[in-house]
Amino acid sequence: MAEKKLEPVSEKRTAIYEVVRVLAQIVFHTIMPVRFHHRERLDRERPFIMIANHNHALDPVPMAMAVKHDQVVFLGKKELGSKPWIRKILTKLHCILVDRHNVDMEAMRACMKAIKMKKVLLIFPEGTRHHEGQMEHIEAGTALIAMRSKAPVIPIYFDQKLKPFRITNLYVGEEIPYDDLLERGINAETCEEMNERMREAFRNMIRNAEK
Image (cartoon, rainbow, N blue to C red; front, side):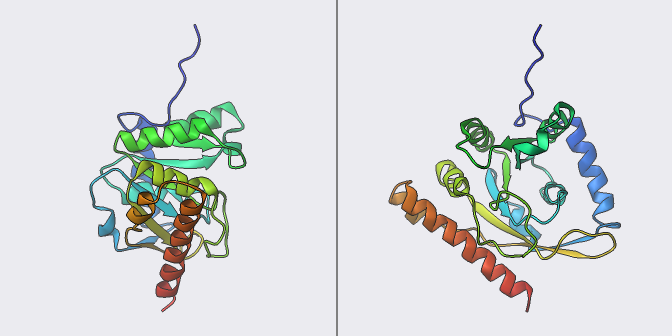
């Protein structure tokens, strides 16, 4: 009998996801402390999309900790799941593995499923880890997912890479409006305008964080 295919989006949070959330409460209050700013902006009706800059492999974990009562489904590059056992663990952590360089319809369907099931979707728009702090390069699929889902988009900014015994500030921004773009239809032009709004949101958050 063929093994049942694991799905990253499920009705309930998996046991391993719950264990990681509990451990995160310890780790990110002690060893790798994270200070949240405007965390209350995440206390909202689901579904919604969080977009964040990406500095460290553990970045999704404090995000899952921040959204206390909901399942966070996050996107990761398919290369992370190169070994079957790692892929299995990532799937149980509700990670959608995506091909960053090609149109990945399976990943797109999984994202739409997460939104339809009223989950919280976490996307790193740069598609990989960067340490410059900026958000200038955004993968084309980010705007497409947001606009097709019509879900609220909330920007998240890590002011530095997670490191032991050093506080990392995590800023939660205001919702990015894009209803006017939807009225014009989903196309290359409106998707690029959406990307620019995301870039500008991060520019503003970086400027405010540096004050």
